[in-house]
Image 1 (cartoon, rainbow, N blue to C red):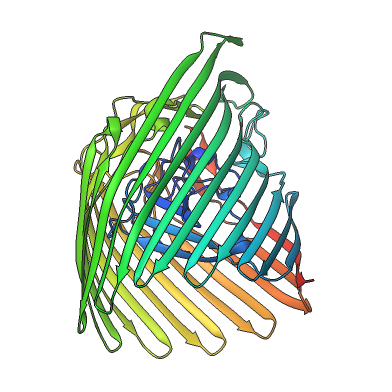
Image 2: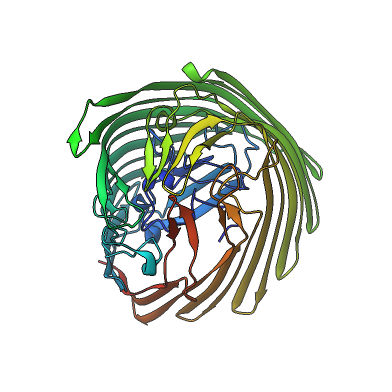
Length: 570
């Protein structure tokens, strides 16, 4: 419901290829790679090979809170934070708490889940499991579907085990999470699958007013994909490519922080190494030809510092980051800003520089969606951004108002540049394009009416190349409204998200009309820890155009689910 939070396309994560599920905020995007860093308990969720996000890894019921930071106004994070960052935190372990859940919905959708945690003294342990299966839905207009079209969907199993140790001054946690998923991509031949696992550790210690933090992780992944050519009649399909993409990554960092009544400073360093290769087997007339290999190793390291000084009603902050990105080059990212607070008012302003190195996926892996082909480019350069922003907030007794504006100047933006565009085929290549400018305005309003909480948000993001074409996949206007009624054991939520016209391509020749998306959800306590749940997406059953391959692609129809969830203790 946060305006400006977008994946590459409008598709639901139930049917979207994982390579299109990168996150962008504030209209900074143009490809499937994330321009935002997503952290889960401090560890990056961004795919090491391609930068996108496997949202199927995240168990929504086990997430305690989500923090969204729009803009890269801090030096603590580096690569992939051009448009901001998101931090997800698992809820802490509790003494012998267990959960069991089962949801079912239309289109053959089922989702069982379970969790178990225990905390005693300084120790805590938790685990959770989730599975999902659906028959899916057609991603082309039903009246134009051919014999090769099949419902797109996903089935997966995901789980995690977490161990915690904590005292008043010292904390340590380690977590292992795994995912195995299979996706049907909308035709008989087109499918993909992923298996991955991440092992991570996090340590923090306080000594007086000093705090030390250390984090490390290791990820292993295997991705498979099949591509095909689909005839214009959609009654014939031919295998074109099989892909296998193994990758590994490790990363870690540390920081030292000191906090006093007026001054807070942080210094630290981090490093990351990614190794991956795309093995492609092309097929001609149904027979495999010579295998193509592309890939390599990306090594990055950085040192950073951030300081905040408070005097009376003013807070001044500044920081810098030096990033050593191997073959992608070195990069310096400074930032500075100030904030003023008086009574119910708060004003803020900042300026900063950020960057994003091209991923191994963009450098070496070709991608195909139907008959739309996106070629790799081993000569891509690092994206760079200069930004400034300012805002004003007011907090009343029962309501809050926030308004702000920002200006981003991007050079060497990586986009899918159209080389061929015919009714039968689209060929694009990832290229560093002309400079781009993103001008934006944000507004948020929250108010409580007794047991009803309302939220209204709006984003205007005018994202254009210097040649005046609009950046692909970015609407100029986005907005959302949500009302939540909570009383006793009942929780009901009504929400609507709306988006204006956007373009599929860099030439702005393939328009995607605006749309609105209606969401309903509810919970009702039945007995002790037993809860009934209900949810509905696209409740108005609107037909939403999501892209062209060059055949038109459509989004999710009305989807609903009902479930029971039990949470108790031993």
